[in-house]
Length: 347
Ligand SMILES: C[S@@+](CC[C@H](N)C(=O)[O-])C[C@H]1O[C@@H](n2cnc3c(N)ncnc32)[C@H](O)[C@@H]1O
Image 1: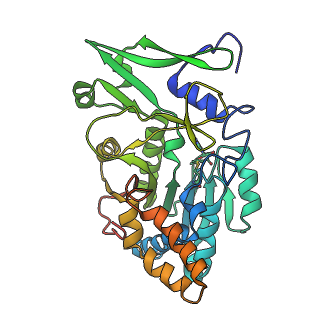
Image 2: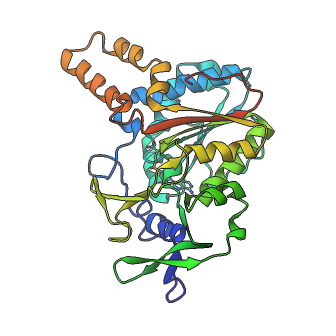
């Protein structure tokens, strides 16, 4: 970051700096996955998660009429566990495997190297822009991708709107508000939303991704399967949080060493998608999705001949994914596809 110029950053630019600065960023300077890292995502908890996503992918491919070529694109692949599980599972279905190009869209060079070490497949490539020359149908998968994108906070006081900024100090930061012209935000936020809310948390970058992906889906067919934590009730909430060493921490402290995330507002996203026209979105909890995809039955099958301790371990991990008090209800699964699609497996 250049000196003097960027002492005060909008909240989303601050988050972008803290997470993705080339030298100091949380995702760009280290590998936050695994035991010593800050979090463990679903594909790192149980291989059955990736298997269920793979079965869903195979069924959707069949529903699309088994196209001879299809792009399966993971957004933000972390340490690559999900893509590895998907490729290994789909290999068992050669009809589909032959038709697939697997693609990872990843911003962190450090994590791209981790992914390259973790996955070996001639069918896998990396793409830093979601621009496609071919017209194959495309299925996008995003597990805990959108929660890692920067958000803005807008606040209404009396008749005026303000945006949250961060003043950068030596080792930390300080929040400050700046008065804004709300008209400039209207392309993302319809008047009804601005009328009914005094606080708005939203991610302009998420909306940009959703617009681009939606355009591709309308043009080439396919869909987006989005799995993330969030809420589906009305209104907006301040859900921004920082995590360091598995504990909540101050967002503005120890910059570059804390993960900063937020909870997705699925109700807002649903409205946003419906405004993009000719698309539909289905939404359920991770628990419902995985149960409908048959995760328990699969766990029974793979653990049949195992020792009790191994079987217990498998079910303990599945439980973390589906228990209402663990990831089961907080995590939601959203499927976005063309309006005329009849596919609703898992929902
Ligand atoms: C929370 S991790 C999720 C990892 C993985 N999907 C999983 O389930 O384990 C978020 C990932 O998204 C990547 N990422 C964040 N912003 C990105 C962007 N704008 N473009 C591409 N990748 C991005 C991060 O580097 C990281 O790999």
